[in-house]
Picture 1 (cartoon, rainbow, N blue to C red):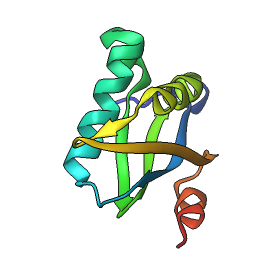
Picture 2: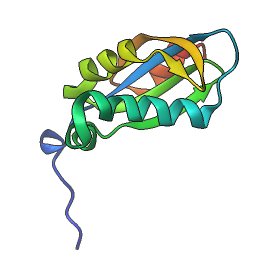
Picture 3: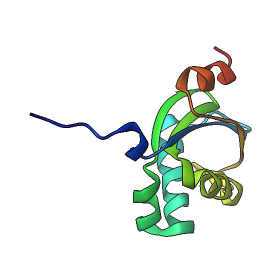
Picture 4: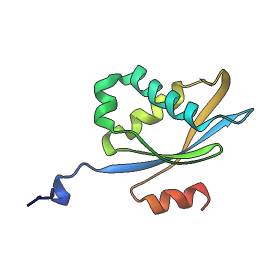
Length: 110
């Protein structure tokens, strides 16, 4: 019989809605790789594993990342240090942080 963790023992998660400002469109695959690599470059592989970065949804230049509650500020810092994706100058801004995916998707614009 499988036992589940109590809700109080589970790790808390947050959904970070971000927007990418660039002159041209950026591929989804390129964006995911670059953001993950930048987080690892800034904080190391161990912190990236603890953060549990998962890309939930992405539309054109806006996306949602699921991350642990303790690592939200680190993700925002790695956004600030990122300046190029696919050899294009970019700027990434976090729009909102939510504990519920439904509210994060509403921040994306539906």
